[in-house]
Image (cartoon, rainbow over all chains, first blue to last red; front, side):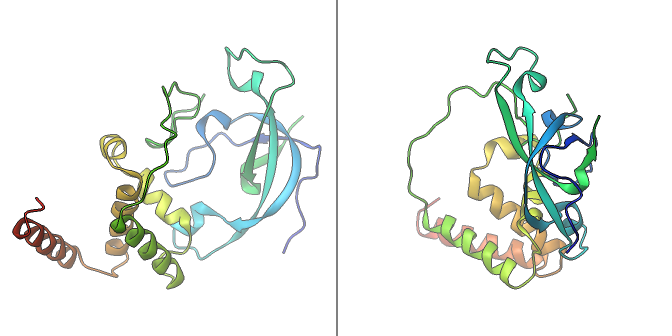
Length: 95
Length: 108
């Protein structure tokens, strides 16, 4: 099992793509930048499971994104965050 | 924001009131649940992702009209037919037989 590619506190960008199969990234989170809140466990990658490619395990990270970045008309405070679990192959380091 | 992927991808849209009332599951719903778990245990489905994929490929109309376990049933049927576990013909025969039985019993 490979080492985690990202560490807690690292800034990451969620990929902006739409493969035509089930993928666990809602459209509102695509292209967003967040902070790794924690490194979670492993789970088979949905896209490759569906394509009949066995059960290739991928690491999952909990990514924290400011609500004010996600929703243009967000009425809450700057401190409000969304935490969402994202597979490693959807993440890239961000500035 | 991106184009949504499938009829389920509605995060951030206005949803209206949410029905939070408790409800009992019908017997057939438990049967569908059991069949999905059996298909997973036997490796006919590799992961819940496959069931989800079948649900997300439903037309927006079907997705909206079908209940939770009806979506499961439709996805499972699609997957089992596309993998050759059952034939579309055999499935159609079974559905027709059940329909005939229900009509005979006055359930339809």
